[in-house]
Length: 346
Ligand code: G3P
Ligand code: MG
Image 1 (cartoon, protein in one colour):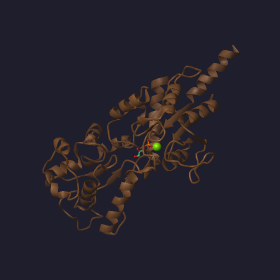
Image 2 (cartoon, helix red, strand yellow):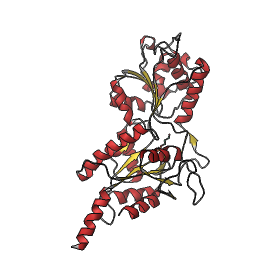
Image 3 (cartoon, helix red, strand yellow):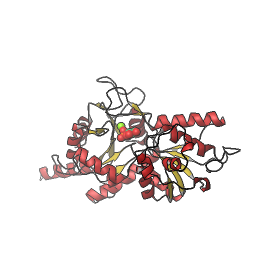
Image 4 (cartoon, protein in one colour):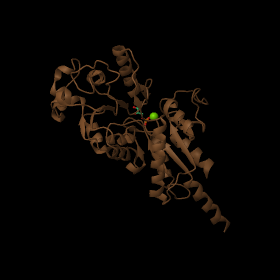
């Protein structure tokens, strides 16, 4: 019948749209969930007129703990199931680097959680800056070192170790120590602590940053707060001051293209998981709060983009971002954006 044909068409349309959600400033502010986000995700999980799952992935520049731990936490906050198979955090694509580097310095995040992350990714020898501080506290004159740091540290004889790469996975919790040890390794003779290279440019080990955001949305009521991009800029300036040359570095995360191609792969597999169809939905919508990462990256990648007003973007009612306007409009919150997309697509 006609009614059946119409709903069949709608089911196809529902499988031909997909969402990529930013987390901080869209679904949550730090540990506080955004109420409208709960409703939006419930709708996509099947609580809609068709009773069908509309595919979505979470694409965040956050990081610092395992995918499993973060998804579990998000599911509790947002009161919907979240699978690691629909989740990409800043360092998720960096697991590919485990093939190239054995001994890595891994920085950022709470406690020693990034150690576990790097180990699950397959890096053989993972060193945390606090391990080095535990071995020789004089290495960081202004760093902090608590009893908790001591308890989790794995000091070894680092004078004998050669580091292959430096990986920054999340925001530093001890800038003094992380700056010092990263700069030490960048200036060292091929990744050996306590040495200085004669020609630092030629014997420099590579450094990777999991994302480049300068600021991010938190629970703070004032302007957005500094994040990993600010830390990277400081490292670059210190390296330049020490050597006179620019630091070559690699940055992952939004708006870098590699992160979007990775997200496509994840989305394709997720389609297979929920609809038994291994293909990309035609119309992907990025919902983000940061024009300089979420929106510009989505626009460049050929996605539709929605900017929300619950995070970094501070424009007035009716305004879009001037430099990186969202091509599918600006919304008060994520639920309004999702509803607008569904209205257009179904
Ligand atoms: O440190 C920045 C990061 O937390 C931003 O996360 O979800 O807004 O990409 P998100
Ligand atoms: Mg955000």
